[in-house]
Image: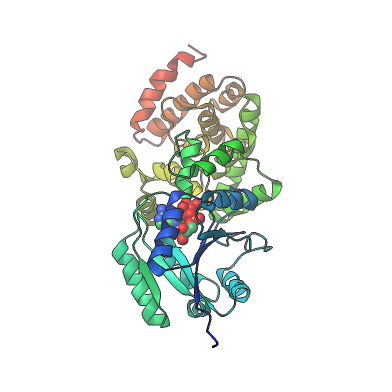
Length: 406
Ligand code: ATP
Ligand code: MG
């Protein structure tokens, strides 16, 4: 007698996997178990429309790490379908292709984390997508579970679909956090499978050696230009030029200096409400003085924008932007260079001491720092008649030893 072939169930775990971590694996395994899925297919993305590619590890590395991480599980497989597709990848195209490959007898479950579910509405051909495959919305630490449930219910009502909800054992791990930990020389052991850890070491992935291409630089320039007034952008270009000169003479990294200088004022012209909103969203710690002088917070806000919108976490760059406004004790050379370039770029109107600071910055950053701090202290207290940030007193006391006119 003819026997109808049983429907196979296939779950799809899409992601950048940059790198894959145990949060992904636990999630996939839980879906496999709960939905009686025959196979979980991991699909590393090619070029996701929402992520900038500046800091993205090559597809091949991400693919191989995914293979290493999943090799031991007989139900896990990895697909090259997205990484082999040219250009921007859309989920709808992937699902359609998988349907074609696997045929009619397969039911597809697309796994999405709590951070992605509410974005589905913005995806290409979303209503069609919701019709042709099942979705599983999984919980993720840091995202409100009830909120997720609400969103799922609302999507189900509006689109007459059946998005499933699944609570997975909580693992507060993300790829961005793992990359950040590597940059800060913190261990990633047990956060990723051992094979992945070894692979990362072997290929020195995420060591944050940036090698910017001309294209990437152009992309950064136009982003910054679009966020600043022409006047502020001209100042920024001046700071980039000056900082690169100081960096060269003081033996600092070109790319790091370039990014720090270019982005240093990225948050400078945000309206107050927007600044406050970002402080809350990115959980930025402001000290009491910054709270009452919000314009001083643009360094910290700018640094957070670079981290969240560009995925650049290298501490040397981030701190140079964070602390360029008033400085801090124990500044690195790059922090000093950005501070000094900001004060001495060609476009900045001339003031007493500017030429001397410029001259000193070319061979002794500490001597230049003393003059620069002294000059801004005078400006703020005598011309603007305002209070300086308390750290300025400490900085002046420390850098006094480098006063060339002593
Ligand atoms: P990044 O920090 O770079 O965004 P990520 O850790 O979010 O990386 P992705 O590759 O973006 O990893 O995630 C792929 C999918 O896995 C997404 O749907 C995401 O929500 C889900 N996911 C990632 N980490 C977890 C986790 N710890 N718990 C549950 N789901 C997760
Ligand atoms: Mg993510």
